[in-house]
Image 1: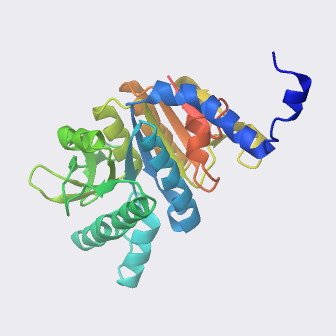
Image 2: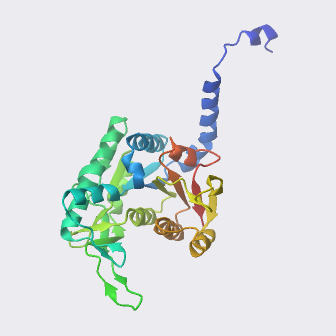
Image 3: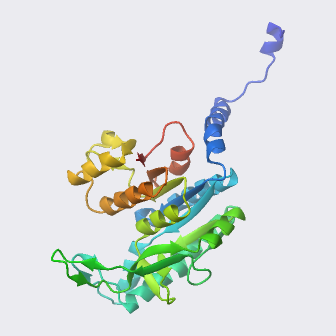
Length: 304
């Protein structure tokens, strides 16, 4: 048995070091649970405009891969596309409230998403010591799409141009990349069966990827902390919601505007077998790790 004198001779350990150890111990059970599981992460919104937020977010993604999870990153870039269109003197055209994508707009979107944003994300992961590769029409395409067909309330179809939806993926390519301890980075540009490009919504693209690989989780990372019952009251942030509760909040107008397609994509992913969907804010440092690897999350999780 140690004597009192021996106890008093123990070195003093800084409290912050003890806290870090406790945090790692808390994370251990989650790390073991999610080892070798796939998680699809969609990055979008104004979060892409903040270099510090993107850097912190990618650190979290690298951590996930380092401790055995298999992250797949899907990204959009609507604001960057709009800026590039304005610089090219192209006026946006809308059909029934939806942006029309002509060939010129599509080429700009493809250049911004695959040629710029995707490369920047890959370069940042590499600079932090991780491994990543862009999978897109400029390298190795993964997203298979078809032109999106929509109807007016009277049942007549209307055309949005080269706007598509993901109807399949090159699954073997994607999974082989994950097995090589490399993070796949996918911009929201798909190719149809004829090899022609389609501009697809990044939220629905991420949900489709999660569906086709039977992902453990789907995470939407943006500039929104999650789902609020009252967006003007931070205390109403919902940490846990069921699919039925989300449908009710949509019907009541609590979930509205741009959050609706995101939540609908989440519900579709859950319906197809994804176990949990998370909504987190990239502006909060290491929000992704806090949501996935702690007993108390920081955003909103949605389950069936």
